Image 1 (cartoon, rainbow, N blue to C red):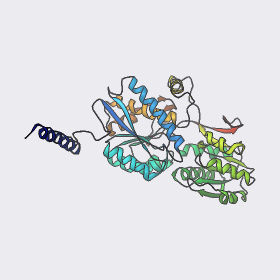
Image 2 (image 1 turned 90 degrees about the horizontal axis):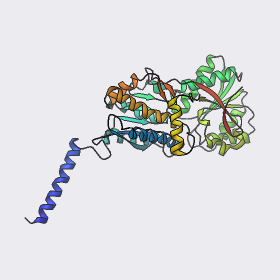
Image 3 (image 1 turned 60 degrees about the vertical axis):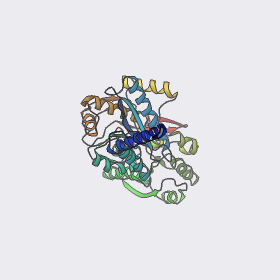
Image 4 (image 1 turned 180 degrees about the vertical axis):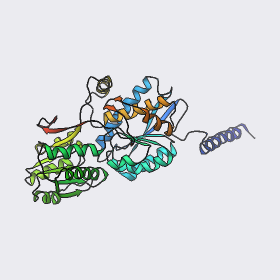
Amino acid sequence: MNRKNVVVIGVVAVLIAIGLGIWLGVYPPWGGQVEGELVIGAVLPLTGDAAIWGQNGKEGIDLAVEEVNDAGGVMGMQLRVLYEDSQALPTIGLTGFRKLVDVNKVQIVIGDIASSVTFAMTPIAREKKVVIVSPGATNPDLSYEGSFFFRTWNSDIEEATVAANFAYDDLTARKVDILYVNNDYGKGLADAFTKVFEERGGKISIVEIFNQNDTDFRTQLSKLMASESDIWYVASYPKEAPLILRQAKELGFDKQLLGTLTFEDPAIVDVAGDASEGVLYPYPLDPDPQDSAVRHFHEAYRAKYNKAPGIAVDTSYDAIKMVCAAIEKVGGYSGEDVRQGLNMLKDYHGASGVMTFDENGDVHKPIGIKMIRNGEFVWYQG
């Protein structure tokens, strides 16, 4: 046997050994864990209808990871995040989640911001004992998706309760029309608002729905325009919301519109223009600016990105930092370890406020009312 054949056989043997090692689990799959490194996953809408939130979330995660690694990592390991783009669509998000769990063998996933995607992931998380920490999925029913689900943003129950009570008490509304996007996010808000408002003695006159990516809402708006309601409650994504506002103005809308926190988005003002003037919406109160965690986050974010943080930046940043704190607390990083550690965190001071996870993995942060005035997002003064 000549020297060339020996080399070829040797190379083939090595490749077979590596392939067998991967198949047997001796070596990590491509993109998976390696020695001295802790790999976690993130499923976010990096493109599509909710891309602005996904990109915001990625910025918060990247900043947190950079800080963790600069400080020596977590349990001496450098942190690395593998991203999957959900496009805010359940089937696509679920495919990405399965890849992270089954191929990359991650035990911790940050995401999704879209409730419908998160619902698709939680059954597998329960089965595989993978921790999910969502920085933005808000549907109330997620509270009952098992002990491996956590979120750093309030449930819609809290936002909708504030909105319904504000509509009844401050706006003295007794009849409300509802228009919402036909998915878990929109339905969760509409149902929660309806429950609270009707318990107060109010009445929901008309409920209309629209689909994600719709561009013409005139049929639904015409029905609402014919109603004798006092105000409208609209649950929408930033892509559709400005179109709804513009078309409502074209039809002669002259009532108060009460939106959701998603109305705090530059696209609303940029696309809707003066049709957005006066819109009211609930929004988490600003955390204490004197809190060292809050102050540090804002300084670090502006230094890295040269802008103010948008929606879900701080909650995504907190998701990473809280996971790392949980790992350090229990001294382990399996899904079971992280679940236990997150439940042990009490009054954690994060970028988005002070948080403790309740028995459902929920946090409870105070909410106020904001409005769009002269193209700016400001706190409502009454």
